[in-house]
Image (cartoon, rainbow, N blue to C red; front, side):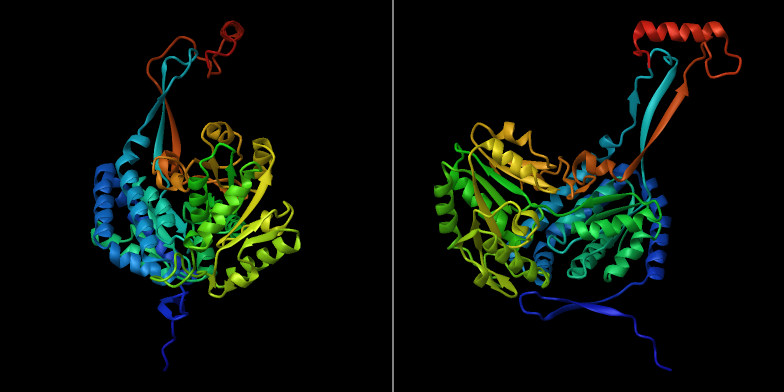
Amino acid sequence: MATKRTPSFDSHNPATGEVAGTYPIMNAKQVSEIVAHARTASAQWQKLGFSARKKVLLSWSQVIINRIDQIAALISLETGKPVGDAKLEVSIAVGHIGWAARHAEEIMRTAYRAPGLLLSNMSATVQRSPLGVVGVIGPWNYPMFTPVGSITYALAAGNTVVFKPSEYTPGVGMWLEETFNEVAPFADVLTTITGLGETGGALCTSGVDKISFTGSTRTAKIVAAQCATTMTPVVLECGGKDPVIVAVDANLERAVDATIWSAMANAGQSCIGAERVYVDERVADKFVELAVQLATTIHAGAPGDGNYGPATMPSQIKVIQSHIKSAIKDGGTCAYGGPESVKPPFVQPVILLDVPEDSAAMREETFGPTIIINRVKSMREAIDLSNASSYGLGANVWSKRQGKKIAAELACGMVAINSTFSFAAVASVPFGGVKDSGYGRVHGPEGLLEYTYARTVVRTRFNVPLNLLSFKRKAKEEKLVITLTRWLKGRFG
């Protein structure tokens, strides 16, 4: 009798198309069993306490550092990005592991709250408790840095984690589980499941206590709908159409260098990558000139050859191509490159100018090595156009004197002034967006607290004659409360 084969899928080297690995497609039953094991392990993981969990996480970070060449090579293999970029990704991820491990206890410490005059005989506290089991669904563009921003903070808070990596980068996900298990005190604290969309859907409805998802807005809506059937809360980190605002007093050389890197690095496959530039018309010609000069020195290619790699997800090529054509059809012009720059699996740098705001190229996330530069008459116009997007993830502002003022008016979750991507590397600040860019936060204190729930505890310290929460309450006591309310204008609450 023939043995029934387990369904599987292949991951590929996007630069060559060669098979990088073969992995099982886990079904709903398997996912449920894994979640059940993680549920059992969560009680033990919580009992370890902050100090012991800190030691485990720091040991894990050391393993990763010691094997950075190994994991960087694997990331490069599955995504096509240069090995140097992969090492930078790993380094930043390790920084987040260390920060979460070292700060979880102080951030989750019991908070004491003032009970107010009326209940001054009470003690009021808020405790933070881990949720239990957290499901993490990761992306392929930063297959280590991004999921670690959820995994590590959830683990540090006392949860166990079931991780579903992208089907394009399953090897990185398996490597994270394997290295963690080398330092884990027992099994099932961090488990990786592999598969396609159905496997991710099974995780959403498996009964985990929260899902942390990173991916497209379209998929995020599906994830949120699936989670709603089991009342599972979600953190959604979705796409962006990040603007760059360049004021007349900007350091143009630095602004151009950072903007072109932000737009082109990782083949433009960054949710916080620059996609549209609003530059003061008084310095626009110089900005475009410098941008084109820089673009001529950059090219896509396989790791070891190009400044950036191929499109990791082949279907994204069609989106990039359609946006370039739409921009031109709608009235934009090419300052560098154009439709001919798309040579699958690579896309060479493209700089577009004066693209109308209603063009799909301006409204939708391109996720490729392209940048649109539009002129504005004022910073007011730049701010208004930036905020008109349905997205609200990150933004970059270039100005020597107006940076803080402009940043304060932008409808987005993160702003970098005279820098780019910096908010992703600072572990102490939250990462996330608004509008179609999602909700909830990873990183920082807010990221730790996302994987906890608040428990309010109010305790009677001593008894007082005035007992309002009783059927024995007297009319004169009610009158006293009303008098105090009027006199103190609600300040005793």
